[in-house]
Image 1 (cartoon, rainbow, N blue to C red):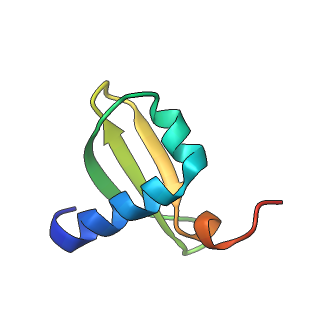
Image 2: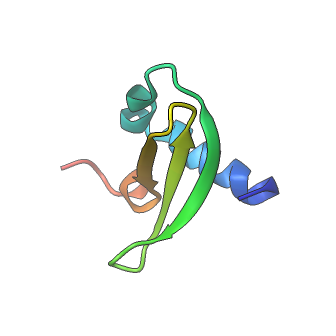
Length: 65
């Protein structure tokens, strides 16, 4: 992802405090858009240690249960 798409993914990740805590100081190398099985928008962030962190827009908009 590049440009505004990358900015949107970064904003969603940074709004998900549960996912920000999973970064543990690691940096995002790039973002990927994923097709989720329920046809919702989800993303994956490739981190500088080779790991991937999955996150979704849907969980940002729904209250925690």
